[in-house]
Amino acid sequence: MKLFTEYPEKDETKYCALMSELVKKNMDNLYGGEKKKIAKRDTHSKTHAAVQGTLEIFDFDEAAIKHELSKRTSLTEAQLNAISLKQGLFVKPKQYPVWLRFASGAFSVKNDYEGDTRSMAVKVIGVEGERLPQSHEFHTQDIIVHNTELFFIRTIKDFHSFFTAIYRAGLSPVFKLLVLLWLKLHPYESTLLKTSFKRFPKTLLIERYWSASAFSLGLKSDFDPSQPGRVPVEYPAVIKFGFTPVSTQPPHQPLPLESRPESELKRVKASGEEDNYYREDIIQALAKPDAEYCWDFQIQFQTSPEMSIDDATIVWNEEESPFFTVGRLTVKHQKVHSPKENDFGEDLSFSPGNGLAVHRPVGAINRLRSIVYPIVANNRHEKRGVKYQEPTV
Image 1 (cartoon, rainbow, N blue to C red):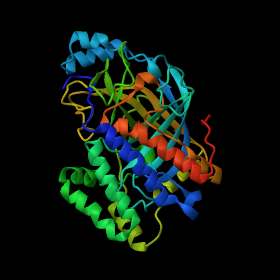
Image 2: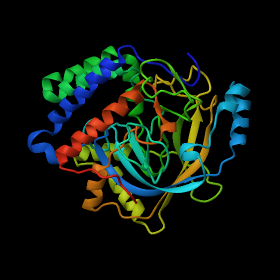
Image 3: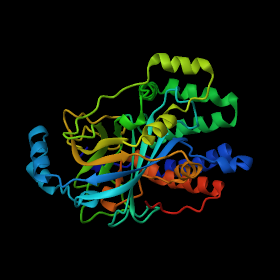
């Protein structure tokens, strides 16, 4: 394996095509017929809130970042010289308006006391530059992050078999055993999934988020967009994104992660009441006139081939490759609970393949996501009767 290089998966084209058909069938099963108007996403189905914010890109010191990389990693001088940080979203200091969608990761809408991952999808508005060919918008950059450092499935083929079990379980209760059987036959993935479900954040507004999957930082002069997934493709650099919650006042210290008390989770579960804790928390927190929440926007470099690009179950060790802060995301006082706001959050469309060409999503799972996400979004909008428009401020 070479550094900054993604590799095709065996039978990748076949399984991407199978997944494309399967998600359509799953959406029809979940939201066909009379259920069309309530059509939601097939994953990350529960929207907690759509929130406005600002992403400030700093005038960061590129030489200082490269110097730190040279001290802490085995990157050669030639490799470091070939990396250009100030391109794409990072080309110059600027403040961008953003839309955020906070959600839970499950395939269906569940109570918040149930174990799950939580996501923050960031849509950066007013981004200029050469677009990825699969972009569904013209002036935005999507950055989808979760409160777990990894994805729980290694390959497109394995994800297809897992999703097939999920689809069949949705057809009839008789097939629900198929999901349990899949997890039993895949102990590694089952363990990762259970581990990811263990966090119950006290609030999604003070939570750490990771992209888990990787993105390019620049393209080589001979880059051919038809080749990823067919042959190995090398990039000038490959990074992951992260958002770390920090205090609102300088020096913007990282905030400790907090969890919902175990006693509260047990009480709510025993009550039998519907639990929409995270939505209610965001509404109440942002309703305060002095509300303000901040995250450091960070990037992490792949610094050795063992930090896999294609296997998103492998966490990139921060001792070996630290996160560098390149900007700050800020959310302030606002009202987020109107029916129009709810519909807007449901209708927003995100994809790792929506954005600038130099921030290309890389790795097998990312290639699959870039194909499948737009299919699900178009299907969902069609069922909801929505004529999708690129969001503005």
